[in-house]
Image (cartoon, rainbow over all chains, first blue to last red; front, side):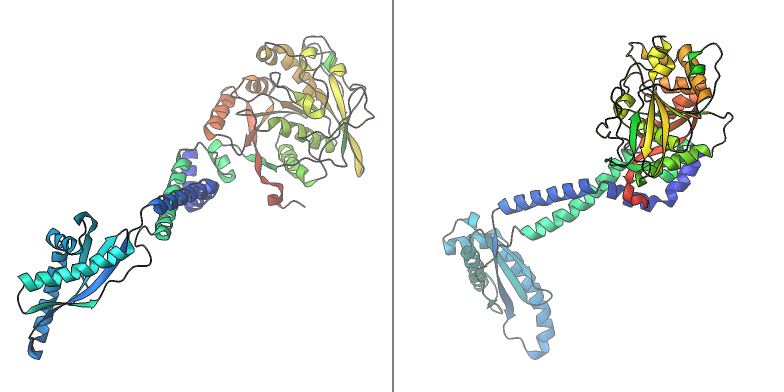
Length: 259
Length: 236
């Protein structure tokens, strides 16, 4: 009976209970989330800064007539994908390293086609901003040379937008990292708080006390502060008066009432 | 509110205020009025009422509740006796600023008369007539407190007291720490008021309630202590 009553009550106030539990653990949640944010900030800030620079190239086909325009566009898209893949190969990386006289380990390249058109992004990353731009532009030159050397005469890689020296690092993104960490920390810590609440041996709410223990709540006493007041309490020098019955304990208790 | 007790030897000199005692005319007295009303409205067989105040664990505020309830009951023009039945760790004598002994153990042992062991407290305010209530402290410390509480002289004393006063409030040790409260309540037929603080543990309360029910004690209800702030209640 009591259990059934309790479960019904729980169903009714489940959402409120969740909010109440979160509110009770608010300091824990906020504190832990702040801690996660600080840790994320420290970790992100101490990471080495990586700069990225991107050059935009177009894979062009020579001698395409207006009637072949649609077909050439489709071919151009496929070529863009092909050359994007070529930029990521070790062979091209070696070419760039040789061209710029850099160790291969310092040449980090990536490439991707831009949408469904004939354009390709060639991106280089480095801890040195100028080197990132240098490697990206070097990669374009290496790709052009590679196409001229190994490709057909009908294809050509045209530099549309050369890579520029980046002014801000691409990573770490401190703000983004902290923001994501705080959001994830908030969710995780809230879930943890609810888990703690689940296993906590907490007393039920006032409304549920009677249902669970089968006894009413007679009164609720708030946190009280005590201060000097006009009411005085004094202890009489003489003892109590109506004690005749008490003095006769075990014999014949009786006597008067009152004080 | 703070009460300003005077010592037995120098009762004309106000002593410093005692922390833990409410001002019966202030909003802080309202929870105890509510408790008094709740207990008054409950049916009872006898004219007198013995109320055992206990809790599951220590530090839940039962002594404060017991003393302030006694204060508030005295305001209601009833004859009230507050008994410090916690012979292991008594606090009422400290709360009211009186000596611990002679007290209940001394009365039981025959070392003191009840009249000599009982302190008469006078509650006075400029706005209302003086009220009085009696306090029976724990008395001389004994090594076998548990045996004393459940002894026949103790039960007889409480039964005799209950015939003399309108209300007898007994402050007892926590149920899970000692069997005193269960023993007293069961053997005297007293009503048990169970104090629970907001940090209480559900399992502890349940175990304590089971203990009391096992011996047939009559638990009339709970007093939830330290539930929010006074301002939250909207007293005026």
